[in-house]
Image (cartoon, rainbow, N blue to C red):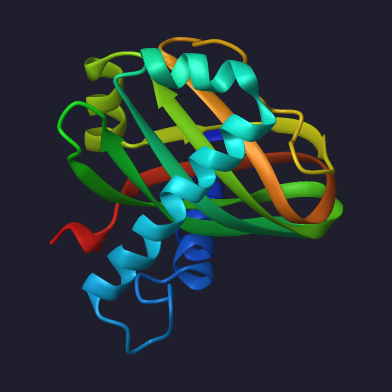
Length: 190
């Protein structure tokens, strides 16, 4: 399989995994209104920040300097293929403007397990934040072992204008995977 065909297959898996794992109405059941879904996401956002600040003193310093941030709750399953998804919100600190977003991931791996975790993105500048909200973000290959309350991916500084923190809630996943991850705006903004 050539490289462009492989990337197309991975992109398809990302979209399917994101939609099957967390359809837009998955936050509290299939009959939940968009407003209830937004309230649910909004309630988890300050919890994620509080957890991050308790676990990483430097994160509060970066947050104080950041233009904006985003928090996501994610579930990822791994068994020869990896797939997962989640919902979150990006917030411009100065205005409080909120943009609801989704995340999907999928790919091939050598691992087994499941993991529920939170991601917190801190954006150093308005341009970095605006690009994330307008265009989303894509990530590629990874190799990690995550166990315990704070994963190995805890950022210590802004890199290219972004610091990313991963905090596991439940589960253990040992993996070396080639996965594609995509972040995009949710239909909860309509």
